[in-house]
Length: 242
Image 1 (cartoon, rainbow, N blue to C red):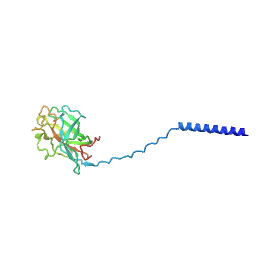
Image 2 (image 1 turned 30 degrees about the vertical axis):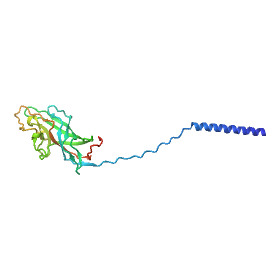
Image 3 (image 1 turned 180 degrees about the horizontal axis):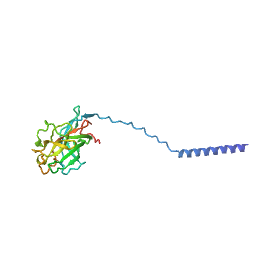
Image 4 (image 1 turned 120 degrees about the horizontal axis):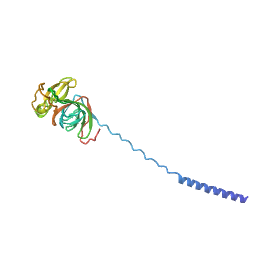
């Protein structure tokens, strides 16, 4: 009996030793649990207040290049520079002097025989502020208020303000310049408004060929906003917003 008791004790010791070794091996194979760091709190940016510019507002701009009905291509673009700041309805400057307005050539008719002048129909699609911010606009060609545009000799475009008539550039100005004309039905029955760059004459059917519409660099005219726009207060250090 004593002999069997010793054997049982030996077997129990062996079992305990083996169990301990297996437990230690399993513990070594167990991968350490990695705790994820607590998520950082999300800080939402504070929305910057915007200010409205009503439709019907006129931007005064100056042409940066020369376009002519002799070579202009439909769909091509050109740029103008804002010469006076644009204020919101609450008196905040949102479009400062020096902003760039992009124009697009929508249609071109070269001058033709029989005294037919060249014409250029344009629209305005975008304004880029000096700080890089960009906003889409829907603008049309218009003249400048007579109080602001006192002299056509300074290269200022002006035209007759008529209801339901679209303004386009039309040949017939002095020294090959262009004028703004009101066009009925998108180009028919063009009427001459003011003259750019000196004294011009009426276009007559006796001319061999009409004059090209040439809008020279430095010419000033207006851009009529067909739709309102909203912009934040202008700051020189603002980031770019596309």
